[in-house]
Image (tube, rainbow, N blue to C red; front, side, top):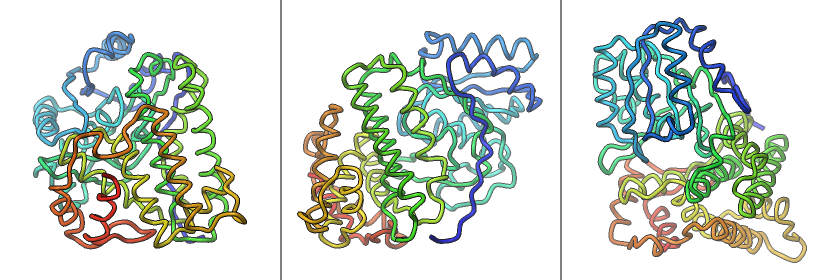
Length: 386
């Protein structure tokens, strides 16, 4: 185990009717001008919009809104929101939805107090002097951004992340009932996103990390179990509650304690979704299995360990390389059962941009920690994903 610091101040309000506590939460922060960020009219259908409207009316809070968030959120919308936020003296940003809305809100919270362009944080890693507080009402179980210190933003063919503890939301309201009527595809890509965060943390080059090893293995088992329940009955509220909580657990950095997470697979997927606009969770389903197949040949011990502990692949009968390959095939089967693509061919993506993506991703050096990837290795994994 290596040394670590852990910090996460997000207040979790979980369960049925939890959104009704919004007024008290906003009152605590002395909110005067609130900007609501979301995607589409679903928040009105779920009754969330009325709860927000009632809360700001009762507290006398100036209220503005933007419902134009799209998947793989774009810098241009954030720039619009920053401009509006400056004009209206916004002092609190509320995101409703999933990772795209939350990351848009985080980026806006960075940009409003900043004199320069908000893309500076993502491109140049500028450290913010001030960040506005963000709150979240989560309506999906996927990215875990509701309790993470990270935001991902797209700018043309660039998709970059920014991390700072000050963009961790002040509170995250999670009512599993809001996820029950999601389209199955959105549920499935969310599950794929959750397991990708667990796997990235599991694939660590630190060997003496038993506590987080077993915690991650247990979380993966719980996710597989409850995903199976949802496949049988998409309305299973208990399974949805488990998965929504797992989404936060997988990405609130607690499971990073004492280990180095990899994140190589995410860097590959970010290139794919920036280049082709694919959904992140489905992209991770494709990339993760390809990454494990590649790693099975060069550094198989972590995937082999996971195959044994989670999928009961016997270490006596199988070599480390074989166990790692079994893990790839088991995960591939899992993604297929969710109804997701597991190859780039299924998404009509060819090989013509592989060189461009590999060079762009590795422009500042190798990516990933468990087995660092240069441009050639990066491209080799993409080729396995075809």
